[in-house]
Image 1 (cartoon, rainbow, N blue to C red):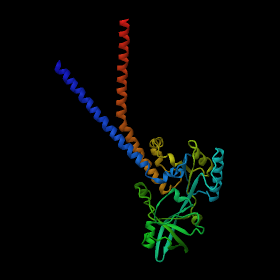
Image 2 (cartoon, one colour; image 1 turned 60 degrees about the horizontal axis):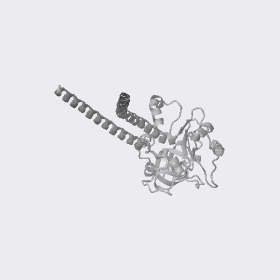
Image 3 (spheres, rainbow, N blue to C red; image 1 turned 30 degrees about the vertical axis):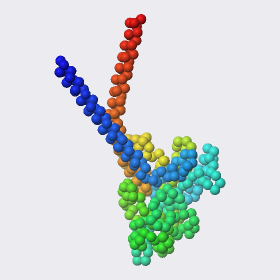
Image 4 (cartoon, rainbow, N blue to C red; image 1 turned 90 degrees about the horizontal axis):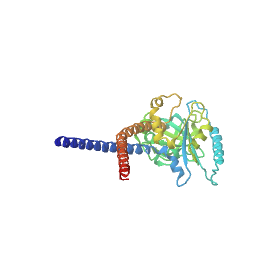
Length: 344
């Protein structure tokens, strides 16, 4: 009988040790997956520009993006009218900018194919026609020169990526040099380095050469396809609602709030809607930066699933321990009450 109790004790001890080890491994896995999730959420800087715009301000800001179908009819005038709506909505919640400043910043862009020429060198490129604040939202690293600015009155300056600069000039230090587009001269403002994150590289595989120029240059062949806005967000979804209700996105346009897209509830919703997300039914050809963010969301949804699975055993173990402690405490209190009754 004594040997039986010793074996039973050793067996229980062995089981407890295995359970402790498994829980420790699960907690380690949970920590790794959570750390990786948090790291991925910070990779794409263009999704976190609201934090930069806010600076040290105590005001909450949100970044919102609109994506329009290829046959979009949204014009620069429509955007100007929308800005007036934004001003009105901000006044309604008692938010007014200081003189000479703005509470919000926005940018828009369209895409086209262009042929660039420098002497005998030719380059067929993917051209992004952008507004003056585009490079605030997409702060690409400058290899040389400068971005486009609001002081470019002639709209004849162009920013090249590294591939285009090398193909046309054989160098990256080409700011101030000239090239031509359909016989019209343009001055190179600067050369930028493409986003080096893995998902960005995958999203940009189909566009090896990209240039950036003022939207007015290609307005006749490139409808506005993306509008981006950072504005105050005093209550949840305020900025999103202002854009959703007032920007002319049409029936097939899409609006999303970039500021919250990588938060756990949003990623969890995407995982359960994974199959539907893969289907393209809205007629929108998303720009490379949005495709990169969507690919990152997919990877993060799997990390979230793995983190959730790894947390199951520790949570169950905690629940079992709490139940056991509760029963023992309940039994202890019951015995104490019985003892007092007997003593009385």
